Image (cartoon, rainbow, N blue to C red; front, side, top):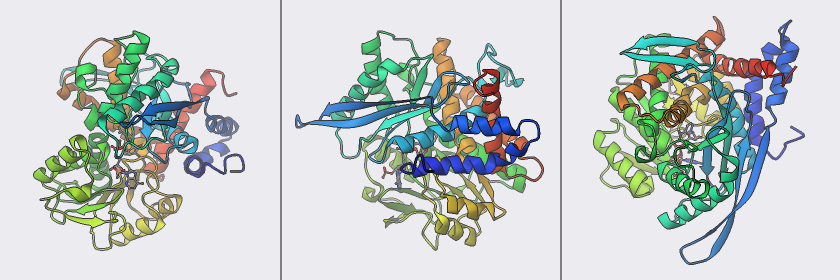
Length: 462
Ligand code: NDP
């Protein structure tokens, strides 16, 4: 705390992990090693920071700051998202990187050739899966650039300038960035285009989240949201002996993760009762319809509109509202899919008072420390983003494999792999939780133990 007082969200992420892994420090054989491994992992291996000059449509030059934070290479090339948002700084990116070291460790990757120790190998629907513990580990990056209100040309020029700086630090065997808030398929495409021009390397999967036409994986845009709902479905069936069908599911955000969380919830017969953006919230008392969903996709993916500007929706718009603060919105399951710390202690207490049965994190660290305490003190199902939103980075890993193998996987094949991957993460989390532990603790412990043992084998922590 005294070393990084200016990075409160990073400290919050470290404390959340410490809460889960601290009991391991008392292990009579490995306790001292686990403590050292944990401290080792709190310092990123490398932090790269650079300027990003770009020109707006009026010919005026602006300069933003960009970062790439390479947290740990213990398990393979660095891998992780790029975020473009005005709130981005080194502390936010350190929180994202730290948090997701453990997420990546949970995500076994199908590698065809079975590189690394194969922990699951089975044949399903004629496809052979070889899941290795992990082949890459997290880095994260981005810029304090606000894409809102910028023209398409301004965004393209910014992406090109960003990659002009970043390209000297990334390649398919070293560091493979992807999207995050403010960086979707279009932005990834612009950065990939610039990388190709500068590097003359045209077959490399140096970025994931590309469109299918330029080497992207089927289902990658849907992966985080679909994976989140697959995991929620598993947990509800396993722990509550129930289903998501007809349940009232509140979703926050209306970006990539929220959009496909809604899609899969609707597919499974659940009622999506809300979505939001940073200006307000749309509430669908009778559930979001297919027409509503199509209109939202058009508005967000094509027209770059705010939710408040949408007309002819079956829902009611609440300016300044959030699904977590509306007193009358009844919720069975909550899917926070917007950003960090969106549910505070009051929001968590309100959800519990309304009888919420489960919280599944699509966003990274969407619940404050106070909110987490409220959920921990209740009997609800609570699955952190490290496990619940791992489908995105999991399929990014598959995109790397697809590019490296110069191959192409069909949508149905990728969907089966995604389901298997989420089931694998769920089983690891459940096993690490043990008889009495919560899924939250199991998730954090399972991820930590994998990375810690790799650090020992590499001789980096002793
Ligand atoms: P997008 O940029 O596509 O969407 C973000 C959404 O969250 C937008 O609707 C945005 O509204 C809203 N939002 C952002 N900041 C705030 C805020 N301060 N208050 C209220 N709403 C806000 O991002 P993604 O959907 O890709 O990412 C969402 C979350 O999921 C992030 O936490 C990200 O780290 C996490 N995640 C994403 C993955 C992916 O594959 N994309 C993978 C794993 C995790 P507005 O437009 O008004 O800003």
